[in-house]
Image (cartoon, rainbow, N blue to C red; front, side, top):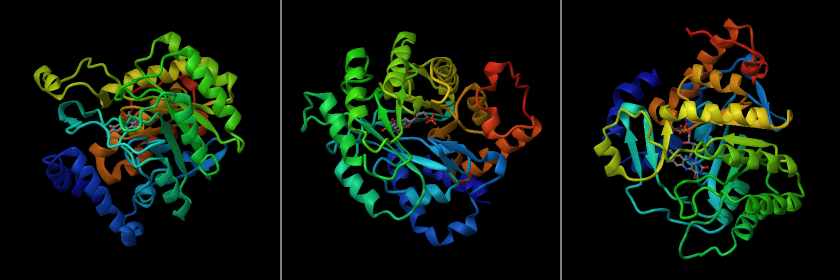
Length: 366
Ligand SMILES: Cc1cc2nc3c(=O)[nH]c(=O)nc-3n(C[C@H](O)[C@H](O)[C@H](O)COP(=O)(O)O)c2cc1C
């Protein structure tokens, strides 16, 4: 029912307005619906969908990706919509208004978005306060990045990210993700091996509570850079890798070139990203240690998409754009479809991780 209302009434209206404005007000509105969350029944659960990330149990493998709830405002709403966890952020040491607007565009023909938000967020001190006060035990990760605000020039990016880490390292979170792959800031993707090495070393030494660390990678990185990230991730004992961020590429899009040109630069997300990021998952799966984990992300709209990520080597997945296009019933539909696929192959989420590399052949579904 809620799916029908979203697809037939809300989405056509929402998509007439500025995407950023709609994002803010629809989620704030949803937070007010708290008393009726149980009636909406947006969760789909089954024992075969249960899994683990960083040794913590999750009800299903679908989380909300970074960028949606940058300031930790919507944990109740996201939990009610059936996500198993969410990633807050990216949050930076200092607050930032991000890039000038407009900075978020819909590519409706491609089921995609282009964004150059530029890490707008209220800063780590305020997010920390919010998380301390929040009493919901919904699992969350925190994605941290380098400050992108001319009012707070950062001479030393290691110091900046480390200070950010120190603000959250005592929180009871699922993991900390380090975003080294934001394409929408002045410094862009961090590419320098020595810098990554020194940063991970400092974080390793500062991580006295042994919080699981994930590195968020870019599908635009060279094979060498991906290898460097994984090598250093092994050296400094990170829990795993998020594969991955948005892409600056614009390949095989249905959206007219004139329109794309008018939108300008920014990270592409949604369906066109799926192939790129599944390939990144496959590459990282072969390079990482067996006990390290992968969070797959990019273009996930259906249970079939989730399954493709799992068999390629992802332990769990995250979505952002698919949620925007599918609405509040997104995780229910995707988890139900995933369950049917697992059932067809006599698998569970945990048994499907990486089986593509063992020769599993995935026929057409349904
Ligand atoms: C509007 C928008 C803002 C985003 N902001 C962030 C961010 O702050 N930090 C980050 O690591 N990723 C950010 N992302 C990237 C997403 O977390 C995700 O990696 C990417 O969108 C691919 O997933 P999707 O195809 O499901 O959207 C953002 C994506 C979008 C669309």
